[in-house]
Amino acid sequence: MKKVLATFLTVIMVLTVLAACSTSGSKPAGESSGDTGPSGGKKKFAIIFKNTGNPYGEKEMEGFKQAIEELGHEAILKAPDQPTAEAQIQMIEELISQKVASIAIVGNDPDALQPALKKAMDQGIKVLSLDSAVNGESRMVHINQADPERIGRVQIQAISDMIGGKGQIAVLSATSQATNQNTWIEWMKKELEDPKYKDIELVKVAYGDDLRDKSVSETEALLKSYPDLKGIIAPTTVGIAAAGKVLIDKGLKGKVHLTGLGLPSEMAEYIEGGVSEWMYLWNPLDVGYLSGYAADALVNGTIKGEVGDKFTAGRLGDKEVIVDVGGTQIMLGDPFKFDAANIAEWKEVY
Image (cartoon, rainbow, N blue to C red; front, side, top):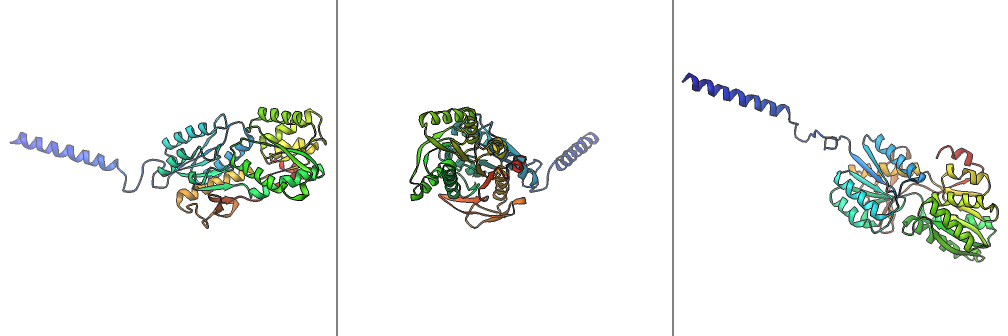
């Protein structure tokens, strides 16, 4: 009898110890032991740019990272070697498997990314585009640098002033599928319909694919095919810098004029040297930064990407979601003019 009682007491003690261990290793209801649980720990916010080796993209991702880290979360920065939709799709799939909270993407194609991005949204990942939009079915909201109409029209106005309102001009764009580039070019063409531009001829839209070597080759081809060319508009930071180098190398300062969208740090020598009298851009750091805060607002439910939604974007202040073709957007601001009077100051910034 004593042996049975001893065995019974031993069993009771073991069960008590196991219960204690189980209790000490658990979390109260609603609390997570991981970094991304509902307790409010760090979440992963991803951004995918068009391709590597693009200084504009590097600044955009830097701004995104700054915003996400200000908000106490982790930023994942990704970009494929080549600016293709296929490469971005693979990255989207990888991010889905990592269960990120949000994906912000600079689209290489407005439509080809849709199945992958819809898959991400179906799994609860908040998706937004920036800079170069994906279609409205593929994202919740788009972050726009500036009014596309004003960007397109101002570049025609600029080149017209430079060439005296007369002569042949060409556009050196990024990829043929880049939605932002195509929208700006459409507005350029609309501006050219004004009778005051009757003596200006747009001879070609060339595509350098945002690759420096190809942009150089396309610029050289334009100069060879159109020996009377008077002006080039390059609404891409890679393209305008490549075109500036070609014009210097060929001694065409003052003969072929250049404007577009460029990084002050890359275009300073061409503006100071008179190859490009002036050009435009916005701050890509701010584009990325705004995207980071918008992504956080989507994840937190502060905004849903619907017209009228409002949130505070850190140092950029209050922002509002407005209508966009096929969806909604958040506007950063107006394009800024860089010329010989201010380029020395801005080239030290970005």
